[in-house]
Length: 266
Image (tube, rainbow, N blue to C red; front, side, top):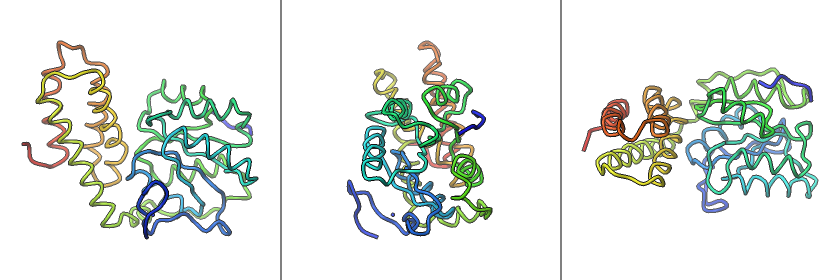
């Protein structure tokens, strides 16, 4: 394939179902595997792919993704494309892609598109070097998602229908909005406690960066773009700030995050 590099009841692993289930396989334009560990993103992106007419199965981390790709080939029911998150537990998206490619699954057979809040040039280059074909930034816009799927899937499995972004936002059910609000509150309070402790381990820094990363990838879809920007700035800062400048940087970051989240400081 020559291209420019550029959920009604319980389900598997106890995940809740909503009315956003995947498209019926008999009418779907293609079969996708979504690899994503954050529940809000899982529901949002599955809603988008359903509206676009695709059947989508979920894997919650890279290890599960590799297993599902392998099983789908053994069952003679392979996926047509993978939407791959990068920052996940157990096995990240880079490693999962490398394993899939090392197992002999080529880009011609199975395109893999990165979906991540990391959008720096180095991140995009790392995606391509790992064996992915393209990159979509979080928060995911349905128009960008549609364009990427149409580019990397066989033409016979796409059509020219182009739903508006507002149509995807109509899928933001009251339950999903409530879930997002809870995740937002949890992340801000977690960061507040982190800052107030004053001292923290490398492991705690990694954990808070992971929480901020997830918030950065969803906030704009719920009308909180400034919050997403602040979460991303803090995530990056915790990696770049010198130890001596952390106290003042973190105090300012906490004030900005609480203000952007529009919640009260404890």
